[in-house]
Amino acid sequence: MGGMDIRLAVLAARQGGAITRNQALSVVSAAEIRSRLRRGEWRCTPWRGIYVEAEVSDDLPSLVRAASLIAGGDLVACHTTAAALWGFGIHSEDRLHFLGPPDVDNRRRPGLQIHPSVLGTDDAVLVNGIWCTPRARTVCDVVRLSAAIDGLAVLDRALASETCSRDELVVASIEQAGLRQVIRLRSLIPHADALAESPMESRMRWRFLDARLPAPTCQIRVGDPGDRWHRLDTGWRDRRVGAEFDGGIAHLTRDQLRADRDRHNWLTENGWTLLHFTDIDVYRRHPRMVATVRRFLDRDAA
Image (cartoon, rainbow, N blue to C red):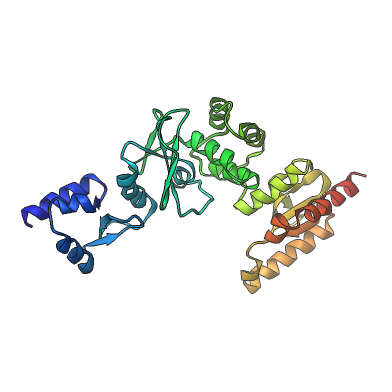
């Protein structure tokens, strides 16, 4: 390996396998850069003038390291980017989010956005070699700045990931006093449940809570005399009403479909009402969905 190759390799290694065009031009010619790209030794990133070595994984941490060469190495991953790095992200975004000091411009560049921080970045934590906002702070940021229907889903996923506790979320929400939508955040934290199995189940549950229905329970287990157990996505045990989100029913095998129908029949025979809803109900027909649930809850309360 020649001296130029060693210098480039050392520089790239310090930056997680990424290198800027200007850095490369300080060592090799533009023709050599094009040659390395053609040979597959380097590859382009979503950001013009930023390359990564071929062996670098095409994953989120690698993208963040590459983007930091544009955004600035002193910035901290935040919002949905930090949530994905922590393992509780539910949003799929093309844009990466970074946090800077309070006086930083709130600016966007292709594929990334830099936010000023009122709370500062002294509490940043290393996650997979990336500086991120702490886990509970990240959750609170995402919930505050997300659509209301996504808030409970983020909280559920955070608790399920076991990287953050409810008490930590309460403390973080107190530290964010005065920030936008913090009241909504605090109202949701008591309802977060690690047992929720999908973001859409959480969104369905949020519709019920938002409509002021009695708070449902996640993953209700119901048994029969044969010691078989049936599990419901969510529901109201005292009213014997269950609600299920059907997201993949079209992909059930014949045996799975048969077992699902057997379960439904058993529940009906034993006095349960099991209601099924889809994404259309959750997003577009939620008034009717809520009215249906309310009718059955009121009937069983009478």
